[in-house]
Image (cartoon, rainbow, N blue to C red):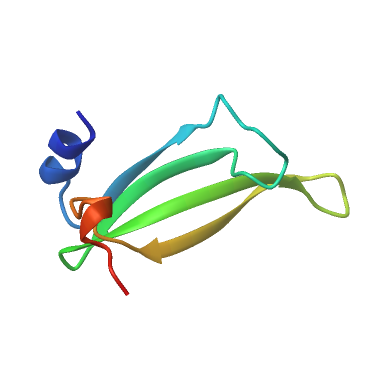
Length: 75
């Protein structure tokens, strides 16, 4: 299902979904994918509160190949 969704992504689009099974506070509240210039990026987001108690989303973006098998990753 994930692969079908990612293969259908258009450049400049993506999505994030809430993480419902967090095991600790350092894990992101949201995770997803975005496609830019034909490359895929994994996106993670954490809900945080600023000094005035305003809510915001802090994000991390890392280029990754979602179609590469874990077995193919060798260093």
